[in-house]
Length: 72
Ligand code: 9UX
Image 1 (cartoon, rainbow, N blue to C red):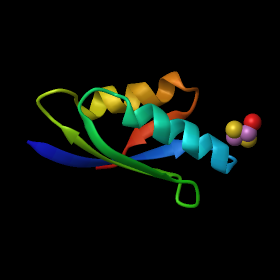
Image 2: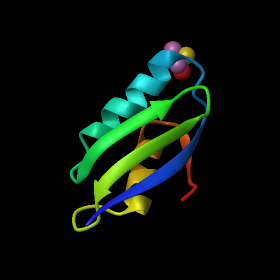
Image 3: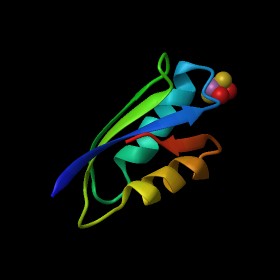
Image 4: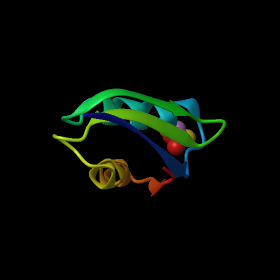
């Protein structure tokens, strides 16, 4: 029941921004692994679909002030 999704994240301008988003995602219940790449403006997240949805992950990122769009 582990799925992978990717988010396009707009507005990250420095490595600290990317770290903030990555740290946030890593503490969301159901997230197994999360990595955020500044260069591609993308997050790749492995999550347990029994606990959290891709839509909820998108909203969790937006709580940090960045716009997030679900890619896959
Ligand atoms: Mo530094 Mo990135 O204030 O938004 S964390 S530019």
